[in-house]
Amino acid sequence: MQTYRTHTCGELRASDIDKEVKLAGWIHRKRNLGNLCFVDLRDHYGITQCVVDSDSDLFAKIEALRPESVIGIRGKVVKRESINKNMPTGDIEIKILGLEVHSEAEVLPFQVAIEDDAPEEIRLKYRFLDLRKDRIHKNIMLRSAVIQRSRELMREQGFTEFQTPILTASSPEGARDFLVPSRLNPGKFYALPQAPQQFKQLLMVSGFDKYFQIAPCFRDEDPRADRSPGEFYQMDMEMSFATQDDVFKVIEHTLGTIFNEFANGKKVDQAPFVHIPFREAMLTYGSDKPDLRNPLILRDATSLFGNSGFGVYDGMAGEGKMIKGMLVKGIADKPRSFFDKLDGYAKEEGMGGVAYIAWASAGAKGISRMMSEAKIAEIKQAFGAADGDAVLFMAGKGVKFDKFSGRLRNKVGEELGLIDKNSFKMCWIVDFPFYEENEETGAVEFSHNPFSMPQGGMEALQNQNKNPLDILAYQYDFVCNGVELLSGGVRNHAPEIMYKVFEIAGYDHSVVDGKFGGMINAFKFGAPPHAGSAYGMDRLVMLLLDEEIIRDVIAFPLNGKAQDLMMQAPNAVTPKQLDELHIAIAKDD
Image (cartoon, rainbow, N blue to C red; front, side):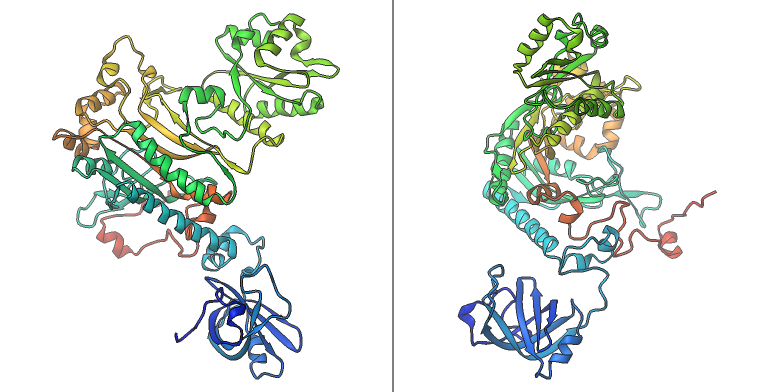
């Protein structure tokens, strides 16, 4: 017999009636009925109802204990008079014969037994209490199960788990580094890794064929609902002698299995998942992470304007801007206020507005009043519209316009209830442009990951007739329900190609040697073709649980200001510690 308990609080059933048992846990709830006091005792495994009558010497002692006090009870399993079918232990209760108080709780800052509206700052300050809540507790347990299953699936496919360094060199990965001063090397700093990118590639160069790691990553970024500030975890993988399709097969088996096993009744797309080129995604969905649950599709309607009769768009088409149209079924008879609201939204977003043609029961309306019947019929046929449908139009140019069209698509889909909330829809976004143009300076910059292999290799880079902005990369993202879960690429393993890639972006050899010396030197001694990816564990669990805030799937998250309110970090350190690190704190003027 164990010292504290013979059974857990989720274990006892009707078959245990008449047994004398010991339980230990937290007081979840108490109900004093005068002659009886009921205690719901909770532990990690569940809840068991315990009862003591007013004749017992223990009645007053139990009645005085606050919720969340930790107790041990000895008692007899008896049949419960009012069976609770909603609890696994609902057929029985424990008649308390003995009591031991392990720890008395103070007055709680918020309720644990119920979901209350406690402010997030209070919840994070007392995170150890928040984690006792059923929803959050189950979230963390599911996260553990998803991580364990990820490991199992990778090992089944021949991957080996490795650990890569946490203290490393600063590297331009697209976000700010967290820097760590070196006591033994005054004036120099380590950086916490934004990702194990270079190390996992070096493992491939070292001859370890298939790598994976549940990797902690550190980025000094602003928080968002789907991004935790400071640190996050990703399932990182890399494989040698591999193509893009080889990575897809591994990930589709891994993530496909996880979604099928943890979808909790939702419909799940089955592999192989659809491939959507980046430029097609931006045109058709207005996003490189499209939510395919939304059936609305954007299309280029520029050719329908120029002499349409609607002067604003005719002029914009003549200026080289794009007009996009979106067919929305069954909304033609909605009041004008519906369409005016969308027009106002566009103007709030800094766009010119939203125009429309609606084939309503009383006839076509919207900008159709400025068009000939032949033009209206042409547009109707081009979009495959029917009576009762409408086409929404928007005009603009560049990435800003594309992204706005995507937000409008999402907004209309949400407002009309078109998005299937009971499904997981996946896709691969492929063929990212290797370079992009800086909108302010016109300079050619990397658009994604400079370590990826350009499609066409050195030939594409050296082709004088090829605009660098037209060079595509072997880079890919995995998207589910509008959330980017994974990024990856086929790696550039050839030193001469890497030097050329950076040269086009305006960097000479010294930059490559200085920033990526360890990796570029390794490539000079024989590097295999290799490819890989990483998916965000926090976002994956958030999606599976349909949680809106990523902090609710992380055991001990930072708040929106990147602070740990429970541990009071970041915090000041002593002058002695600063002296040892040769650091002085600059004073504000």
